[in-house]
View 1 (tube, rainbow, N blue to C red):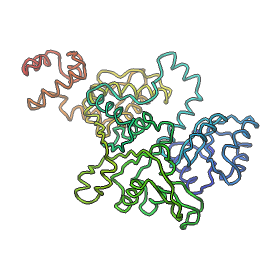
View 2 (cartoon, rainbow, N blue to C red; view 1 turned 120 degrees about the vertical axis):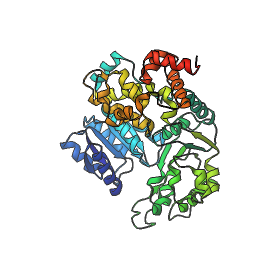
View 3 (spheres, one colour; view 1 turned 135 degrees about the horizontal axis):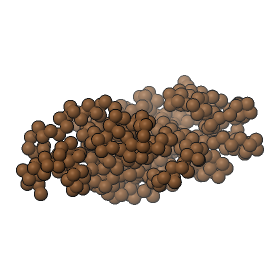
View 4 (tube, rainbow, N blue to C red; view 1 turned 180 degrees about the vertical axis):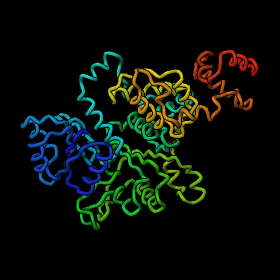
Length: 443
């Protein structure tokens, strides 16, 4: 298990990090001051140091020259609640491996940790580079009709100042879309702060949004910067916005309208300059109609809307996504798996994908781990996928005419007109497919 040294004086956040990292199979040692951390480093070795910027005895950045002086080359990650790009750049120049901004986004933190741990495996990475080109940076959007439309909408709205409401099912990539909008905007050098509104308890929402000053309430042992101030000059992404309580919607609306905030316990107004992006898998129009979501807030958030299509509506891109996830999984798991068998692909195409891209990525990663050879076979896929192949009749043309025609056209589209390939995807012989094409006059 990779071993991580935490340096964080906030007891609550330190404990949260401890439990989060342990759940993700890391060994963790907690320290609360720079002095404690240095003492640990004198007697123990670690794979990663995760340090807060603001420590009670000295600045987190000041640890970097100390580590260098003592020939400690453990990768150092800086955590800062201020999401200050200048500080992050300074840290990298001083030798930090990376930085993580607060509010803390678990998925981002795991990616940073995994990236640093994998970058230490130089021999393995160089072997992979000899075999094939590494995955390109950024996100692959796909080349199907639904994917192209999505990308056009993102490219269109990104350079503007409009607030964007991103909708779609769980696992479709709403946060990835938000990050892409930020990266293509004029604010790309500013911070991108993501907040899961569904995880904010009702009684501390004001502190999470706007921050607080020390002593403003029981438990406020330090000053805290909220996500609005942390995102100043950049983009604030409010995920699962539909889960906000009505009272918290009022708080949010006032800040968006006035572009000013007050920390809890303070009378000083702070001007904020943010681009607001939000996302939900809820039907906010229905929520407005039934009175559970404020109409004025809905219109503030929804100056432009983007619907992320489900994977069911992007089947023509499914094979490309599967291979993209395979490449990433093979690199991460140190497995020489490069192919997906036709039978396995057929099963992937016939599954309904309620969990969308996230579910596909998880299943491909699992299959990569289980594969003994260089190809993912059907036997490496979980039962929920292989059983669905038979539960859905394996496309034995028991469907009604219109559904049958739609399935054939979909398979031909995915196969780019190759009838042999389309027949494989449908699980029928070429002869049967040709007869059906003639029957429905699809030529």
